Figure 1 (cartoon, rainbow, N blue to C red):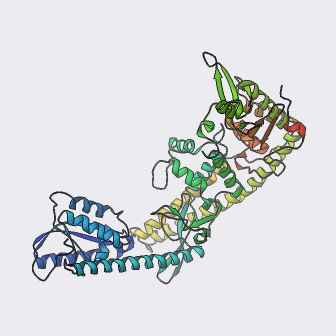
Figure 2: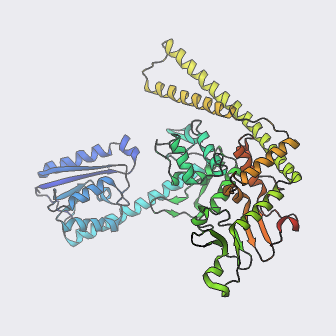
Figure 3: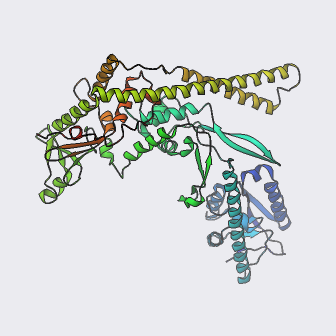
Length: 557
């Protein structure tokens, strides 16, 4: 195998030059690429080698082969016949910093008659030269790992101090310079006024929807795309982007750095994760509520056939004897008879579970009637709504403070713009200065974003609501309409907000769920009380509401 054919004698042939630097900053600021090109071309000219092609990798690591220019070069080198006889690099580390991968690709090239040559590490093709190349590659690999270790340590310390390490910030945030340390600019992230409302909208849609119950990630993506909302890069929203946004703790003020290794997709040791405090966009209670909703829909807990099924109680009704789900069974020629049946008994027969079968309409009616009667009892309803309105008022106070801050931000940006315009008019500043143009654009973006947020916030109805007998009666009517459609069918999305689990026994049905969850959804769908701002913090109404025997048991006829 010819590892390197460079010698003191002239070597004629066709060559491809491979030039690489490790980072984008080196590619933009350093002379590494031009200097490599100059040296490689001088080497070829001195030996009469014809340069056929150049492959430039501006800002890519050599620890793996995930490099676009590298792969193009290897594809061309694999053609028969190959368009070039030799690949020339400045040093073997430009080609690879992994000893195993280097030898693998050297052998692959040799099979097609292509050599690899380094102008700074000239070796022959004898066994000693091959061993020397392998030793050099091992040192390059070791140095690369050491550099990565020291770089990561510095980045973790930077994150511990609350600074941003680079890369694109999460949607809803922007990077701002906060101080100078020598020649380095230290940066942090803060909410971006032009994207904050979209983040809040996404969480609101996940919790409450747009008047017809909570939305899933796919529905939210469609909702945003249909209305022309775009991602940071101008692309369309997808399921992955929405799920990542809804589960990222950055939005409650806790950004996590060094969570996983991106190349291998492996989660890091929790001890190596650095938590950075950032300004929050979403309140913790709202975030936790969304996490619970996402978890409840997870395939590990509830199969997609239950999440998307048309049956009212699919995925929430279970057999009290064996704990198995009660699933839909049909009979009759046109499948007009529909039942809930214990799935264990259906699969295994009486040996698995005695089981039970109940007509679907009957069980649906029993549970909905019971839920309506218990939820809409005046005393319980007044207490629940009182808690909701109190939380709503607390949020309204926060919203007023936020609006005042937005007005201050817009006024400050406007004042700075005015001073810049005056400086231009007085000849103190040059309008053609690109830095000045960029500053004007940034100030306009801040001002216009703050004004848009103010307009949206002031457009919401945050007036205090009074609980009167008429208001209770009005709400009770709306709640019944939320649980039943006018044609007599049930509102599945609303009922499953409260009935987390219904266990059907031989003489009773036990219901577990959250009263407050349903009340929030019903009021939100009515659209006049602004419940999109309410949080599930009323301790009197939590999951497993079982205040007495008569509240969770019903004779089963």
